[in-house]
Length: 117
Image 1 (cartoon, rainbow, N blue to C red):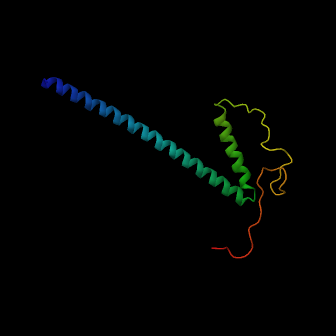
Image 2 (tube, rainbow, N blue to C red):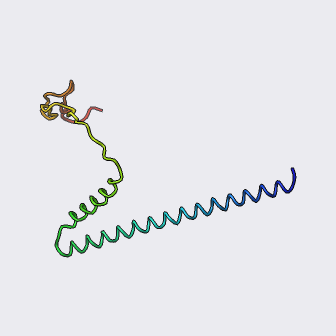
Image 3 (cartoon, rainbow, N blue to C red):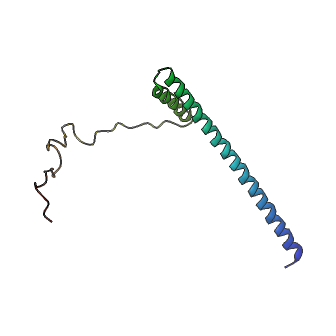
């Protein structure tokens, strides 16, 4: 092996490692910023909830509206899936408590008294 080839290979390896480390640092910085924004949004929601509670309004309704707005914004980019008409799993006459219309098994109470052990 020639020494200049080995040196060039080591330099290329070091440069690649440095690029990968810089990319990783950039990804970590983006993640931290995203987490910071999420925490800020949660803090704003808590403040809004507290203020509406102080005014005597229902804060749960506001929270649901905020979540629907966030979901509608996120779902706008995705294509809504159409749901086929689903039939119920059991007929309308099924009642598990009556013992009618069910399967082959039926519930019976256990024996009275202490268990035989």
